[in-house]
Length: 430
Ligand SMILES: [Zn+2]
Image (cartoon, rainbow, N blue to C red):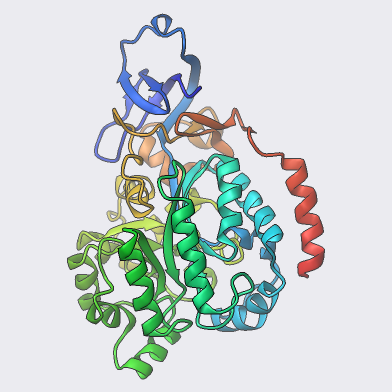
């Protein structure tokens, strides 16, 4: 039964609209049927009325780049450069991963994201079918892709098997209500150009997204430039790999010319400010990307390099980093950051009927408690959300009208079981 009537104090329908006060949201069969100040709940006996005094309802937050099962590696190696962090600490431990470990790591990630008001995420990792199963159980939406590398994977073995596994996922989850599948060559330095082209052909065949890390570090750019005589974005462009179904994570080290190429091809970008800062990778040119009309969204990246699956935190970092770098407090403003975390996130994960509170859209919603001290006084809900809100304020997370967290209580996951499993797994991983 996904029939609800929400009656919050404030609604932010989208970045383009002003907040609505004391309105109702009528949700029927998981979709937003009506937003009105003048609604009589009594005439909808099949709908559950949820009064939400002192609450703000926003479109669900979207995390467009992550490796959520890396929750099991959170905190295991810190304060290292990306290459040694990956090659000496993460990759060797990833050899120990199994489908079961990924399942429980994903359950922990889903629990954390639901608690953080995230309704949809994108994931590139290993044993992605196990991630999908955890996601479906949690009730979240996701764009999922098996990470493809030229070297063997603990899941599928050699690369040819990786493509078969991706095809299996594409077919298994075609037309799934919660799951979209992408084709995910990991990077241009762990995959040959030929592998990326093959992945693109598979994505085209299934009309799926292609997801890849691009220009995350200066080293990556130097490596690709010395191998191909071109920087990663230029190389992708010259091989017809940029288009509106590409989700490019990071894009830290990109030139003005490459920003134009991303804009011209309508390539989508996942900006991961906290991870990029923590790994010392740099700061992506967010303002230039936005001013060139590139569809930018926000990603936490994996919990081993963030270390939280908390988009509210990345929203604040995205906003204040730009102001600090450019010595300009005016851009990006709170509404711009709100848009990239909601509407743009939905576009980047292939759920175009999400990301706004609008008639006919999916009821993917986040509810925040605005009675907390950090919310008071509340002159402008956008300003509160970007600069003052905390995951502790999130009370409800709703996907397709299905309440995944109800008044801070997780609904579909056994959090004691997840906690016990993660403690067992940490002994194997360490
Ligand atoms: Zn990543």
